[in-house]
Image (cartoon, rainbow, N blue to C red):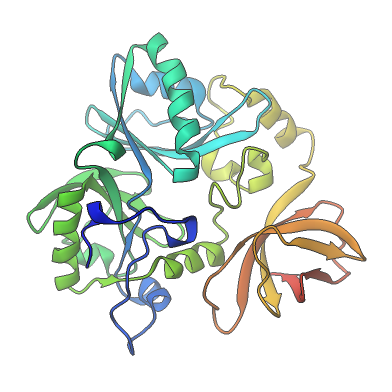
Length: 333
């Protein structure tokens, strides 16, 4: 297997792809549901924030509030003044250390916005992703994940330092799309942990299996299902990413108005595709008119069905058929 730090640049659907060497055994998607699966998510942006009050700075600009406890983090978004999502991200804490990670498609916006506010808060931002030995993330998911880490139990976004073989890493609890843990650290430590965990019984799986589980769970991904044109209410992330009890942040007025007084013009849905899976950006049509578009397509079928995510207009009729390309489309149960 290639060392993580020697991996070539990858497209979004190839992110973290690793050869599934267990041919003839359950698929990678089944391993996520029934076993313990390793997924390389190495090209996510990883930042470390230090200085006077990084949490205070983040709480002033994020849609969600970071808990006061030094081992608890949060999922949130950065918005522009009009309330549109510039990127989503995760904040993790480990004692005095504060980490932020984001999808590669949102890396530029995350760095630009955080760098804009950092001088006023006397916060220093270090991009760990571009060090001589870059940091990354190794996902360990599935019902046996905790067993392979000595019975570790963490709530979502809760962290602790762990030993995995000869590697010392930061472990963060994960709830969606598949429960487990994200292991953060430098490339050498992640390689050592990967070797240790595969010997202990974890399955190294192709990223397509993880992407299929994400679409199946209806979890949007920035750069595919969420773009800088979307509002949080459209993408269905209000419950996870927005606090309506925190102080002001850029775009808050729009988010609150849409939540309390109105309805988004479009919303993201889980879809079942009956026919050839259409590529992302394929229009969804009803009665000869476009009412939405496909944003993500699961690379693998689930129980014989092709799954997708896509936006539908609030005027879409529930009693009329939908199509995308040559396929019929229906709302997933």
